[in-house]
Picture 1 (cartoon, rainbow, N blue to C red):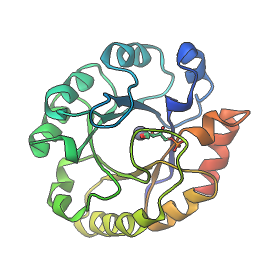
Picture 2 (picture 1 turned 45 degrees about the vertical axis):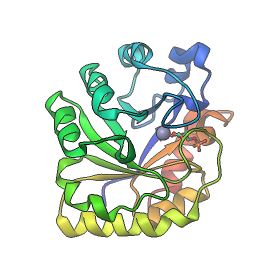
Picture 3 (picture 1 turned 180 degrees about the horizontal axis):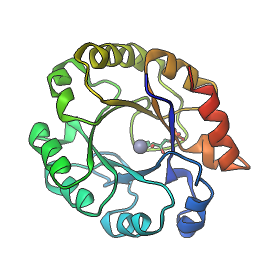
Picture 4 (picture 1 turned 90 degrees about the vertical axis):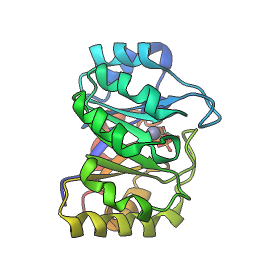
Amino acid sequence: MPQCCINPSILSADFVNLQAELQRISNADSVHVDVMDNQFVPNLTIGLPVVQRIQAVSPVPLDVHLMIADADRWAPGYADAGVASVTFHAEASIAPVKLARELRGRGSKAGMALRPATPVEPFLDMLPELDMLLIMTVEPGFGGQAFLDLTLPKIRRARAAIEGSGVNVALQVDGGITEETILRAAEAGANVFVAGSAVYGAADPSEAIDRLRKAGTV
Ligand code: DX5
Ligand code: ZN
């Protein structure tokens, strides 16, 4: 399995000092940027203009997580911003194959996310179209929630499908990742870990990243 990646979520950072907050996680693999529209999830964060500025100043690549309705319409604009990876929700896309191809065509990696209760099986034929599959380990919308262990069997099935089809797809988990839960997610087969409160809630975010990386390497 590829090495473990830690992608801190700036949802738990200080939004008034984003540039400084990005510098505090310069040892991260990527920065996870949560875009919420108050439609797909009951919360509102930032949109394309702010993501463009983060892209301009970030010391690490951007992993953009779109929790927005009508992903087919809005996601390509984020790829055009030059970010490394754009992840849309399967539940918010009418034509996910077309959208994944469009994201890749515009130069970003294509990720697709599943809410905790969305099964992975209907999407397995799509794996070759994706660079990353994100299994949400909390209901999307807010940081600081508890990890949902009921997602572990889905992570295992997704890992088995990825290995079985021989595709190079990263398996990301997002929500409730701590030094304790990361091990369960890693053992189930996840290899990219988003952590918001566990990183930005720590006294030293960069040390927290190192600790998580160690704890998540199985
Ligand atoms: C939740 C977001 C997450 C969030 C994770 O909907 O997608 O990225 O920031 O926060 P923690 O790690 O605190 O659960
Ligand atoms: Zn996220």
